[in-house]
Image (cartoon, rainbow, N blue to C red):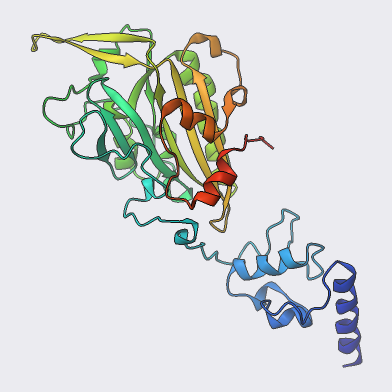
Length: 330
């Protein structure tokens, strides 16, 4: 009993010295902070994290491996996305916004919703304006790459439907917007990424080097517990691929973008907005041997270039805070 009273007094003294005026002033913290908290005192990781953030010196030893996360074995209660702004949408892939207000009537801004991603397709250019998708651990597994490139049957009538052969001997890769590697939990989702509506012509150096490396970095962030909302597309016109088929009387044209770009919203383990990443990469062999970080810009700058409004369902004050920043890779 005497030891317990002594321990409580000592703990209060420690907390005072670490910058907290008194324990009782922390009215929103659990009662255990007045004695000795352990992970068993909490029902969610969020509750433990709140205590760790209130007492950064961690007198209760809740951060067992020194990574800044308390009681990692406890379940996480995700933050309600509605706290970020107007996120009333049934499709998780455009939860944070439809950058061009894509819809079902404008064939050059045509909304295509797949189980694994969302597209704005442009019938005039023969490629998507952008693709948008959610990325977290629930989308990742061990499914093999499908490699079944094929035309998309869901495009509207009178819209040119790109075919794998359109890229043959063009010098450009069939480059994924939504990556195959981001959809490895279910075979059907992986297969869907090989629809030609999800492809843009990419130079080999762009597709196989810097673009791939950013895809891998995105999955690395997810492996650390992050959740990502990603939008990717092409910008400008480098040239046209001419696609002529014997069954048709006309030559179709597929636009080769001059640049590829990507905008990423990063959420932490608790569903809080943590960061943004934006890149604009030349779609040429000049990017060989380069790093994707060489092409980082701000979301604000990318919006000015593309004319799109990224993550527009966030509250305006949140957009102003995060979209002007330049990402610094740790």
